[in-house]
Image (tube, one colour):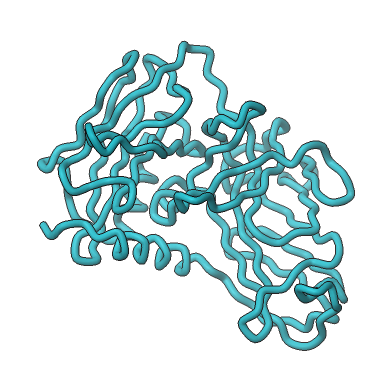
Length: 295
């Protein structure tokens, strides 16, 4: 198969994300109540949309809304759920749903000038989880989405579990990426692992993720790459020893997705090898289906 291109790989991820965008035009002075394809409800009050200088905006504006609940779309779009702890280490999260809000006019991105609300149905990820927190996301220098917990619940941002509505009520005053999450907990000892990849693949043209067994709302990412020994790993050593999981490798060839899905049981300081023989090509939709079908 043809050598992997970092530009083509980035384009595949961007296309996968674009495929998830839901749009609706509304009058800024009137506000909007928008219900997504998965039942999320966004309420932006009237006269809430401001420009970059803080001036109120009138007239037609366009809402773009993205929602992700499943590991397949997390892999396809490179939007795993890894959150910073108090020491700044990136650790796996259990998600109740991640979403992105953007409002634009004439191609210019606009801001929220007030508090807006979002309701995320718990049914999209299972039962209502009272341990969930609100997180906001930023794209780092490596192009990965990193999550920071919103500390406390105040007038600017917060979350509460809604038993009657069987979902999560969220409020905030900044558009962008947000996530309903908590840290994944496992009492077993932890370790770092290495995932070696074939020649020609690296962190610019490939990604490696961990799909934990029986944890459909967790997708970890190996976000470091050793160019000398050609392996992916991570900074901290967060993977439980004895855990069963699937290593998911993704890249591209001539604009087509290249992937490998390899089951593994984690041993201390173990190495898992992805070889040329493990690689297959597929479509984006089939890759998503394969990942979402994993135990």
